[in-house]
Length: 99
Image (cartoon, rainbow, N blue to C red; front, side, top):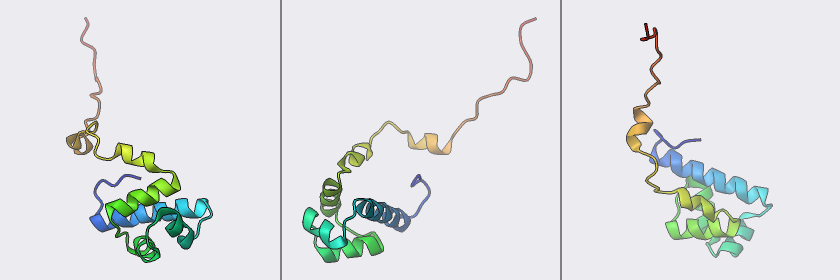
């Protein structure tokens, strides 16, 4: 799902929900992830509840969950922001030009 046109809070909560889902897929408790990542249990609980966390802690959690490669796509200039809003439909020809 794309983050385009979502509020900051919605993006934060969606990232937190994704992290929680990955944690549960790996059968880790919050305490287990806290111990593995070095992020305090309180910070982890707050993150999953509100989406608020420091970048350093988010990276530590990502490393612990094995999803660090997701940061490779962050802030890459391949996507032009204008192209997200100005999607041009291909022009459909209505008649031929050759006589």
